[in-house]
Figure (cartoon, rainbow, N blue to C red):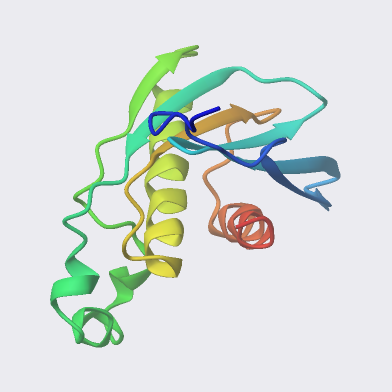
Length: 152
């Protein structure tokens, strides 16, 4: 029997990683699933998901064309801000202006973490958020992002 050249063999099941920690007295769970066309990450508290955000991770990553990209921003106070080239789009679950702002901030920063780790990444990030409350404090933000880096 002849082999079909159009058949693609993909790893099954999808690679999955999980991490958990208590942040602001609430158990926070992070899950990452890696598919051939998407990276799905969920950030949940109290076992609920309230929003889904999509972020294309385009191949025109500025860190690949400019090796001094990160060095130029190193002394800048805004160096922790996500790269502005990402355009997160809320797919489901608006929840008001504050929740939408929080979702876009997390999505942009997670996209930045992914492309910093692998500058050639071109898949789409699907971020599911289920945070118990809107909390834009720096400490909470950094704790959640630290937990996300453990599953990347």
